[in-house]
Length: 243
Image (cartoon, rainbow, N blue to C red; front, side, top):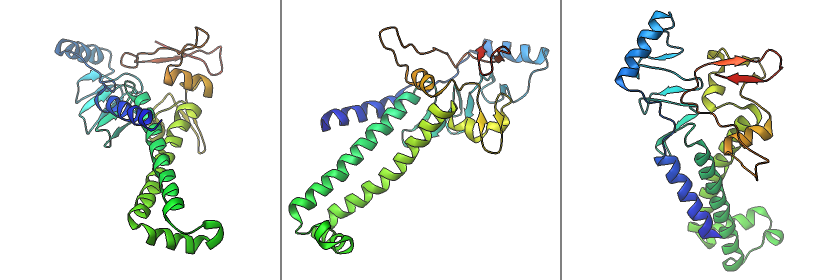
């Protein structure tokens, strides 16, 4: 079981690190054509045009200052995987966080098992403070590993919960949540963000993780590297059509 978790951890880390996060590419000819078209229509503004990459920015994309490239459905730049997190590798990043949390829990469990076997103390018998002193003196290295694991467990767990809340509950990315007021397609109030990309918790998860089940469950495939506009369906309260 531990070996399977380890393999899954390194696989998802590798995919997060090396996969194309959704780099928006364009030839020199396409760049020139885009500039001319936007200039002729009077749409050459920084909200839809990247002055660094010289491309028209798809909706939900953002230029990463670290990587110096535009990323489709940009979430954030992660220094831990050395790559941007976007439409191409966001699922693998979530897998990496999940299996990392599993390995941390396994480490915490291993520390507890070690103390039960090698340390002549009991939490129920000695109480919290005496038990803490005993396990720290029994094996300082193991106690340090435990504290280190608990610390990493907390921030990884918080990160996973925040990501899942944004993915399933809000239907937005980290970048969109932080900069929602900059984007016209979001309705922002003091307490909430209304996203046109939010289809409900279950559908959001199906689309994000691309879950399929015998043809009964199918994700909505959207190429975020080529989606530039969004048109609202006035006959539906929350529906929309990507163009």
